[in-house]
Image (cartoon, rainbow, N blue to C red):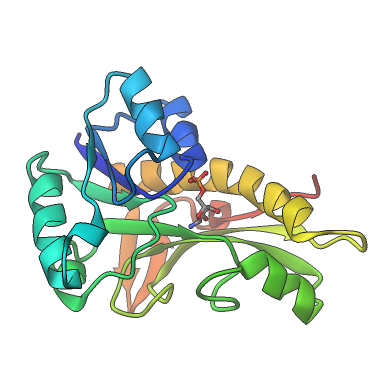
Length: 205
Ligand code: GRF
């Protein structure tokens, strides 16, 4: 079953997805030299770069990107550290077949620098969220979340490491549910068939 991963950087979530035994047909980066491309190459997975900077508009970039993705006829497109805002046209093209992972407990802290902002806000619990990609930035229906405590002496670095560890558990789980046809959208919300209680993780590590 074909799955394409989009990324922009080091690719630790890609690594976790592969380590979970999920077959990945291709990895596409908008940034040349991204660490995730090397992970793909080492595994013999087709790796492509579509540099957004080579295109004048988001639409022109996405036309090429969509062409590269669709060459693999994926059932699911996984955004794993893919640092581009996508257009309504892209969203429509991959409606209900594109997932993203965001390093906060949405709807808190959409956008960038989530760990810094969580610390500045003084929240006691932080985490990550897997959600469907929609027109609203980091705003699509939530599939699963993992929470971690915020400790008194945390820095953005220590907090991000604690969250990332959970990302690596949560994302493969959510992707497997999608591939097993267990994700049902009801009234704009996601239900995990037979597993709803497992859509939340809490880890003190
Ligand atoms: C992760 O924290 C992910 O939640 C965010 O970007 C980071 C990507 O890390 N969207 P990696 O490239 O998967 O290591």
